[in-house]
Amino acid sequence: MCTWRFKRTTIMLCLLAVSVSLVGCETNPYTGRKQLVMTSVGQEMQMGAQAYNQVKSDPKMRPSQDPREVEPVKRVAARIVEAAKRSKYAEMAKQFQWEVTVIKDDKTANAFALPGGKMAVYTGIFPMAKTEAGLAAVMGHEVVHALARHGAERMSQGQVANVGLQVVGAAIGLSGGNPMLGQATMAALGAGAQVGVLLPFSRKHESEADYVGILLAADAGYDPRESVALWERMAQVSGGGGPSEFLSTHPSHDTRIDQLKEWMPEAMAIYQKRTKMPATPLPEVGGG
Image (cartoon, rainbow, N blue to C red; front, top):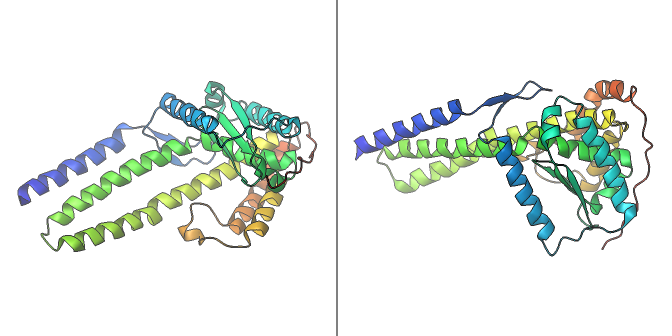
């Protein structure tokens, strides 16, 4: 039995090494960060389209029919997409089939962009964004998540982490010790992998999206300084609550604001060369 466990562990280690070596290791064109991605762009676009259709088919999801809500979102989305097509993600941006839906949900402050360019903006984000320039910071951020293939990278990290934990589990079985102790150790290792590997990568994704997002917003003609005001409002609303940055998938509000200020000279240099878009106020929304 011990011989079989040893062979099984060896085989799993080999599979882990092969899985990492066979997939492409991509490089983020803005930050130079290496990315492990185990899916193709075509697969990601298909998954994005399926997820988007699920969102739109949800009977609880109400698309806004109010032109005061729809038109500013479409205007900002169009300019962000055009900026993306001029960016270092131009090849990817030109492959995507862009589409945006405004979801009438005044209580949900959210927006997303899926692989393939499918976007949604909830009306509950309007009070946080305040203006079209603030909305550009939000949408620029979300578009970068899709263009940078952050979702695919997260899935790949999860797959590799799962295989790695199975390898360690097989190795623990070699000791022939208490099975309950082995389970407890595996649980601890799972938490360790989550905090030590997966969450930090997610924070890097968020920071990349913040950084490149304000560059896209600036290139689209929107004042990137609105991104700082946006996160200051977010911090006020949250009241500093939530988990610590160490256990969070997102940087703290203070970290985010400090980073945005650090990147602002680069964004402002782009903005100064573009036709300036007015910071038109977004419509007020109620609690419905």
